[in-house]
Image 1: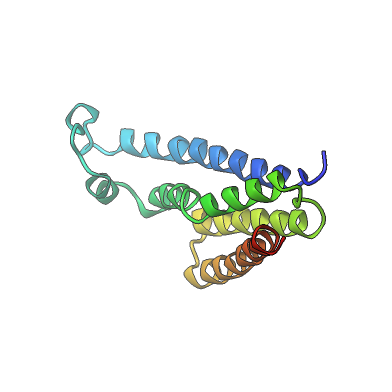
Image 2 (image 1 turned 45 degrees about the vertical axis):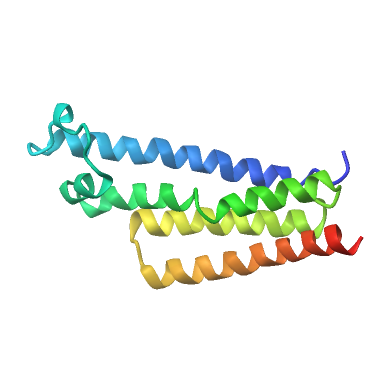
Length: 145
C-alpha cells in the first residue's frame, strides 16, 4: 500500500516502549523487594515521588525514560499516522521516521545506563529537529495540497 512504510518505525517505537515497560519493572520490582522501608501493602495512595525517593536512581532512570516515551513520541505517532493516511509516508518521511525512532532508542540506552544529561539533550534536540521536519512535510501536504 502506498504511503504506509512510515508505519514500520511507528510500530517499532511502540515495541521499544513496551520493552522499556518490561525493563522498568524488571528492575523496579526487585529494588522494591530489597528495600525494607517499602511495604507493598502500605503503598496505597503513595505518590510516584514518594516511591522514587525510596529507590536507587539507576532504577528510577528506567521509569523516567518510560515516561519520556509517552511524551514527545505521541506527536511522532500522530504525524506518522497522518502521513500514512494521506499516502505520503514512503521515501524521505519513512527515512526520517526511522531516524527519529533510532534516536529515541539511543536516547533510552543513554538514559537508563549512564544517564549523561548533555548526551541525552543532544539526542533529544536532534530527534526534535527530525520530528519538526516530519511535521513540516505533513503540514505541506495537508495544507499545501
